[in-house]
Length: 207
Image (cartoon, rainbow, N blue to C red; front, side):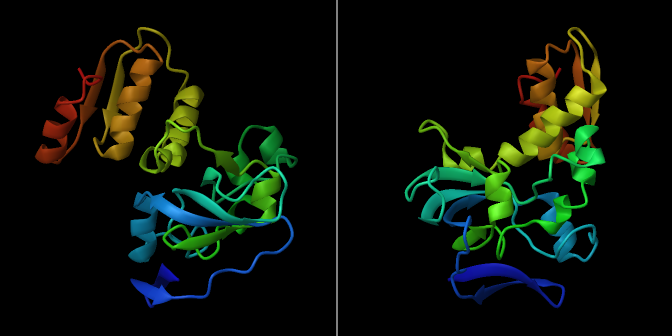
């Protein structure tokens, strides 16, 4: 299979064997995978907080499964990192600080024709079945949108609040749209890029 991997500081396409499954794993055929800023930072050698694996917003179709509730042919989204939900950090609402969180990942990464989701992720809710009306491209936004939802819950955006967003890239635009979902009043977004500001001005949620 073809896979995009990091090699000597570059993203390269390589031929790799299709991952073999162990008990509790599933194998997914990738249909869409978002390109995150973190992926770009990893390629540029600027991000070392987790394993040098790229592609963590993938959606696809299950091709092999060793668990009963996930069937071959199911359309799914797979989370790359999954916490234990039992440690101090998880119980305090900070699962990304869990010592197990960054030890988990997809094999060999989401930018692969096929990837293995390990049993740890599967057992702890890291695989989501997709409704028929959600496309694979839309599903690739599940992870970035989840980070936006969590962030806005933490800052407690209330009805009528004025919201100022610095940066009008994909995440900034998601924040603008989610702020309106949370009934914010005025939503203002800024950027040093004229192109991005012009693009953001076309989004109905931006005032």
